[in-house]
Length: 87
Image (cartoon, rainbow, N blue to C red):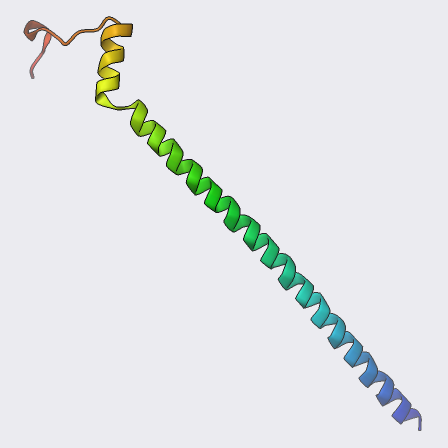
């Protein structure tokens, strides 16, 4: 009689433990899914920002723009032939 009560108690305890573990694992899966979604969204935003910055860099380093800044703002001019040193 005692062993039957003990085995029933152990079986019930095992079922409760397994059910609790399943709930806990489901909760972890849900949290990981949310975190993954957040990270993917952040990654997408960073890629978009990187593309915008690359476009801005390409625009700012255009040779025509740099030439104009050098001539107008800095007063620079192309070198004269006698100013060029050849090895």
